[in-house]
Image (cartoon, rainbow, N blue to C red; front, side, top):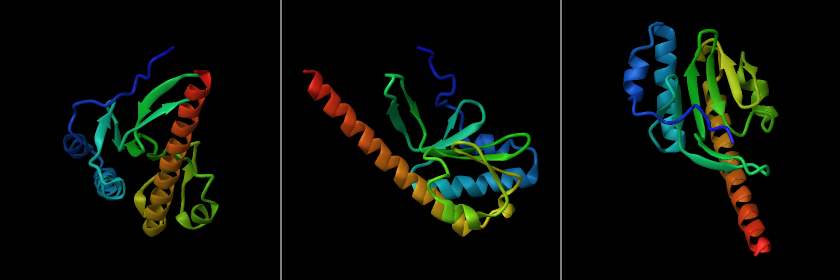
Length: 152
């Protein structure tokens, strides 16, 4: 099975953030670092060369593929600032309606700058997404334990 290329590194988040050349992007990323650290209650760590991730989760798909990933994170990309909430965004349509100007992928929120978003709504979305991800992890772990018992 192919191994994930994006893994935690020893690079310091502060060094990464301070090296962002575009002033607005750097300020947005520093703000996201503060928000996500407070919400996840853990400091961020670098995942690969350009993703800051918060918290840890181990996942196992029904196919047997498994890996480690972060609970939420962000990355300053060339076109957009990408905000990752692993549970995705479709579970919270009421929040998405008042969030502001953005585009989405499965678990990616793409924004030009944080000022395009309503920050109190973003905080609610992050908290709801984190709660959903943690609940999903508990459910998957319980299913996995049950499946192991029934195999015996």
